[in-house]
Image (cartoon, rainbow, N blue to C red):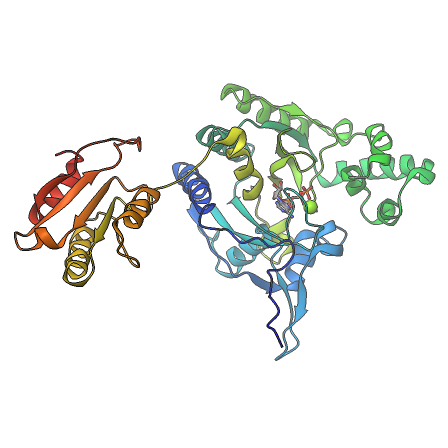
Length: 428
Ligand code: ATP
Ligand code: MG
């Protein structure tokens, strides 16, 4: 009986070595952007109690209704869920460890999230999010800061994105709007799909977020929350707009923008692009003042965002831009036997000096070693030959210049003791 091939899980991607450089570049930029605003990293487990997400995201949402990977712990029957997003877990942790007791917290995270969706371009079952949470800030100053940070990150990555803003106001305003919305949607009940009918009384605001093309006209004509805002909420929004303008950050107000999660208030926003097809939202966020209280903490205002790394990375690669990185700085070829031992010793010596080095392994044919050396994108190849051994020498050849362009220097013989200096100075 043959052994059948076992494949990876649908919608969950391997990140192959060719793809990791662009990921590392994204992660480094995100980390740098967050750190440059004084945000510190937080890491929480990938598994949480199912109850956390039911309460922290809201029962009547796409995520909780149909996208969670939930199961029972086989030992004690505890209900567990692979985290579908980061905010609930960060807030759970902040409450549990009293993080905001003395001072507000600026936090960031990066890691895999899991949602049982139909896999397609820009939509996967395991995907990565980079996110920030500012806990204990009433805004709108911090809302502006979060948007300035994302704006800075797009600049760092060479990405074009458009900012859409909306205000969800405060609870009493949403209640008034909700009444008007239910009345409007009930009037047009025959135009609602099954999901919308179900949500009509439980979470009508979410109907505005429908992806059903047949309902777009209907939701476009629906009563707008922004028309129900009182003076305080309008002033909050105005201050936010003023702050963005003063930083030169362009935006448009989209009155139909509601976010996928419950418990947002005041500011909601999305960064979008038209270069990714249907999955054009690369980052979403806003203010969620009620959430910490809902999860059992002391009432604390907060705001944050989450961005989808796969979508941002697809944009980074727009126009064929590549992110190759050399395997090593030095590639060492040898002729086997004693020369292999010398090659290995030189390798360790160069690594001690902080120079990344690959010592050839496998066939010792000169041609195949040179091919490997070239493919490694190393700047230097060192050849440990039998003939040079007695005089403590090796041959070296520069393959590339500082910017990675090919060069055609002569091969030269040098003393082993000179290698570090030559490699460091990149000339000889
Ligand atoms: P969408 O409307 O595309 O389903 P969402 O409202 O569910 O997005 P959020 O929960 O706000 O998304 O997550 C923030 C960001 O994470 C999204 O803007 C997107 O860039 C990314 N994202 C969400 N779901 C996925 C997924 N299944 N695969 C890849 N990226 C995702
Ligand atoms: Mg979604």
